[in-house]
Image (cartoon, rainbow, N blue to C red; front, side):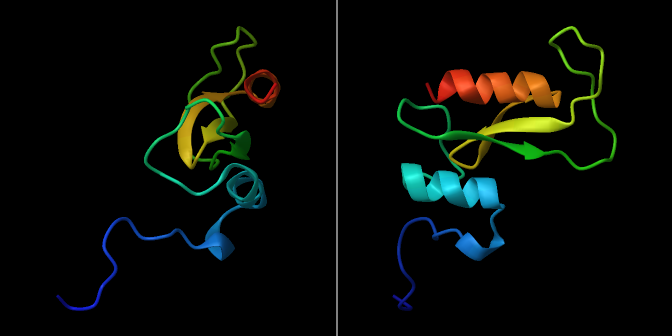
Amino acid sequence: MTGKPSGPAMPDLNAMSPAARSAAMRGGMEGWGFVGGLPGQICYQEQVDSKSRRRCNCGCGRRATHRGMANGVCLKMGCELSVRRWVKASNA
């Protein structure tokens, strides 16, 4: 033993986006970054980097500029409106 803690390391809260930090504080940090989409996890949205992006699948034909996240795991990509609707429906 070298004195290192066992199990996955705790993510740095200061390195998270404000939306991710808020979701982590409201929903807990258990399994952060490994398991997403379980009941009780807080869903949130983040903006995608402006490199090559695919098209949104909601039918608007625009670029997928946002991603829907839960527990640090990306579950959906789409335009801002479609991801906002997904977050609202998931957290209801």
